[in-house]
Length: 181
Image 1 (cartoon, rainbow, N blue to C red):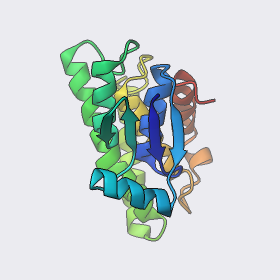
Image 2: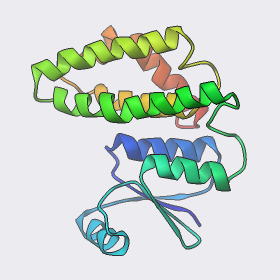
Image 3: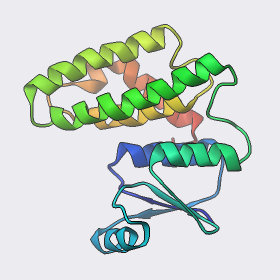
């Protein structure tokens, strides 16, 4: 049995959940509280989430979990077959984790971060326009960017549903492709 330990509000945890769903893999999702977090820390040596446990394997962090699932689980793949597009998907996932995620968190308390987040959301729109995102495959880049865009929806002053309705629709398409209605 696969068990995925998560924080509900974490975009990285959302990525792992959506990839498991996209690959149609049975799994149990366990929300981590303080006590379970302390137990996981003692077992794994880190407090990083998500954590996937499966038949003795322990995999920590969304990128590592996605890579592990690609090696061990059947289709559908969340990586394009074309090497250039595969690299692009990984780069977009890293962009989501390293840029959109931190800016979305900072935008909750900082007007400058909100301005930077708006600029980066423009880059997401450009990637959709170039079909690097939202090409119909629902690859790792799509999933990671969409998962991090969910975190933007609560940023005060962003009006995500109105000003970024196109990005909200993109998130909806990715959610549906991953079976996350």
